[in-house]
Image: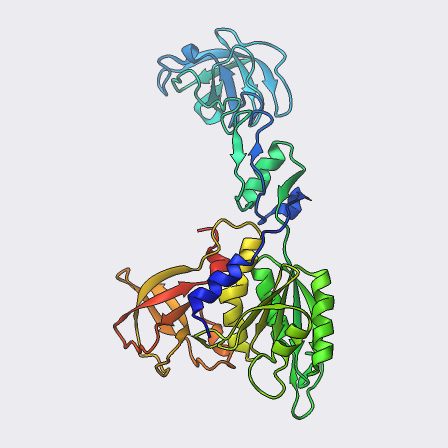
Length: 410
């Protein structure tokens, strides 16, 4: 049995970042950029107006105010997508719409609300402006040649908009890992079936698939294998040919029908470790075959979920090129006693963290902490991590761990 820290270090050391590929722009959202992107042009590409109004000379507005308006002649009108047909000279203005190019000669734009139509072709100006007022300059957002995005950036919707504005139809990103999910156990039936006596539905596979998606991966459902070493071994070899990483659930403890350790050995997988000093999830087994990681998780639902988040989750983030795959940690005050026994292992308690009215972080357990109970995950947003042989009480400061799938970009 090895420590939690050593186990995590071992699996991350054996995790390879996937090869980058060019994906269409929309498919790249929330993916990690594999190379920097440089601007091929200015953005915006020309001086433009950010509002509806009039383009004119700033000196024609000198002294203008509500009681002392200045008067100029409107000589043209330019909507967005068009160019003014005339240049602007002293005493002249061009009606301009939001996004339209600034006419030649004009050095400012006055908003429509600060003007008033006068006699034919004239407007009154009620505001004094400085040169450059209300003009967005070419390259003000991005200059040609700038590194607009860096390798390792997670592409947000705003980044997608920026890339689209610069004319990028595809970008090099790290693809989602294909994650095989295999459940083992002769007691399992499909979720649409009514289980006969002694059987249960294969809910873990669906929970794992949801976790894979939360961490940016693509789940590949491989169904259920009954408790037969040859069948499990063949399934493992077949699934690894089609995926980047394999997650199994069930059959990893020490019972007569816990066959995963032997099946993995028969499949030619190299074991990294079996059993971690943590609760729940002690019987976790990690192995490698053909440079692909295999995690054999407990069949107990809560233990399965927790060990996925602690070990498979960081590996999936690293495979996608994330800069920081580590868990996020903090401290909080315990608001009530925790109903768990002291353990010789590191213990992960499902908890709910928040700031109280005084701004102090506080945390409480969310319900039953048994390894087969899922209901206590409903209001959980962190783990209260208890060191070996400790039992903190209400009012104590405790260590908390946040879900790194959610906080990976913080």
